[in-house]
Image (tube, protein in one colour):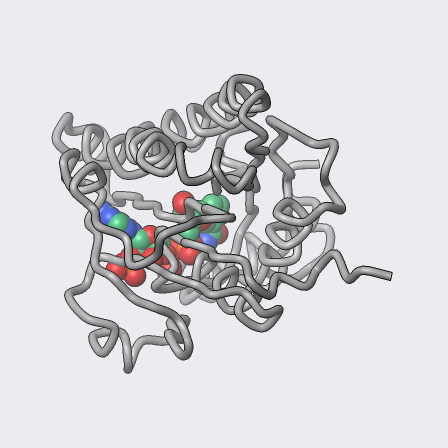
Length: 245
Ligand SMILES: NC(=O)c1ccc[n+]([C@@H]2O[C@H](COP(=O)([O-])OP(=O)(O)OC[C@H]3O[C@@H](n4cnc5c(N)ncnc54)[C@H](OP(=O)(O)O)[C@@H]3O)[C@@H](O)[C@H]2O)c1
């Protein structure tokens, strides 16, 4: 019987694959035989060496800053075909930075506009391979996040974009789906997880009583990229230990 989770011979790109959730997803596909390229904001892979949550072993790294609208269009990939595109880039601003229009625009650019830019940049390659596109949004799409209006609006937008591209590109043989993580221990969430009080408060709201891991998110990504989910399009899977139940 064929192993549906064997990705040998498949080419993957994870934008935002330099750390955290995207990095965990990248390494999970690499462990299952895929050739994996990743992008992040820093100049070289070596710039992530000392970083917790960044393991670039065996991944082909290229710098891509998606907050620059032209950068995605100008991006020259190191591969000629693409089977699976994972969009895991994301940014958040604390201390009311998203209530300033400069901050609001930057976060929306990274979390929403760049999803469309990356999706359209790689559309023809994905059509050619009849591939899969996975967008990482957030459970923040399903409730208010009081201090972060741009994060909320952009993630809500990402869920809508997943739905619509799922329908629009079905005829191209591309399956578009998404993942909405709950609270995952990464550099983005250190502000909560490194603070004992906030960490306890967060854990008390999660029925599974633990934070999510990049590997928990990778499980959903492997499923969504595999033939096990062949009849699914436009869906965003909530992977949150029960946080928003
Ligand atoms: N952690 C959570 O609890 C949680 C919950 C729900 C959703 N999410 C979403 O999950 C995704 C991954 O976040 P994470 O938690 O893994 O955080 P992370 O460790 O900070 O990873 C974010 C990734 O996005 C990249 N990135 C940020 N700004 C970028 C830009 N302007 N251009 C290109 N890449 C950029 C980062 O690159 P560098 O490594 O160079 O900074 C990194 O690879 C994000 O979309 C986030 O919103 C996270």
